[in-house]
Length: 313
Image 1 (cartoon, rainbow, N blue to C red):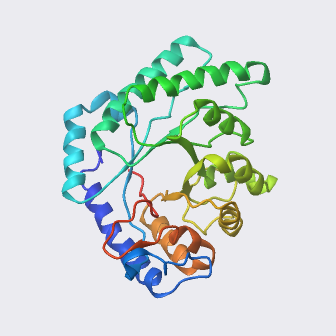
Image 2 (tube, rainbow, N blue to C red):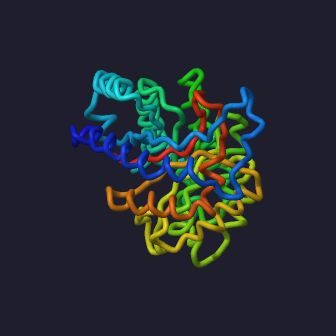
Image 3 (cartoon, helix red, strand yellow):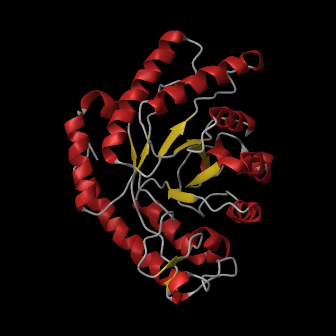
């Protein structure tokens, strides 16, 4: 959005495409996993179609070159166009649990600046990376890693009274336990997990290890959101959903069995990947229906937690 002034207009065009592609199938047909809305009050109910809103990434460019006035202007543009947003906190070059005190201090200062920017945008939720690296955080330093990470996130959230939910996503973890341990010791109902299927498949070698069910079962009490994009297991490619080898039927089936209906963000790189994702979601309502229909609301009421999608800025 900062580099390309036309990005927001492009997103609004994508939103029109999203509505066109997703709304008619959602209202016209339902799969067996969709919840029954017949008991909704007022007797006049419908299944609200998923809506599209941007997930805005705050990076070093934002924190170092853009001022708070720019963020206020962006917030006004979003409001004028009727858009809520989510905010992805910065992660490149940052280490929220670094064992080097100087790097840790710099990371915390960068995240504090990002929180100041994010607060102006009134996001529905925040996304963050834990910074855990199995190659650096060895077993004998694991407790120190947890302690430093805990203090980073607690300090950050204390800065923002009544902050929105924070979802920490899996990135380089080879196993789900470090992420579970971190969220557990934060002891906050407003801190949960964003399960990133693409990261599981690439960084965590999920396609080779075939351990999707184990990941979801370990993280189940804390999963609040999903990042949906695809790859072939060789790298974090951010392909359109359905164009890689992630077992989407296994993901959605396990979530359904666990009774988890999280919000979702699509993370395509470019319009072609977005179109591929939308086409796949529409054609495979047999497996994605439980996510799409995760909330039934009476007609005329606003849906509070629906399928949220982003084209990454």
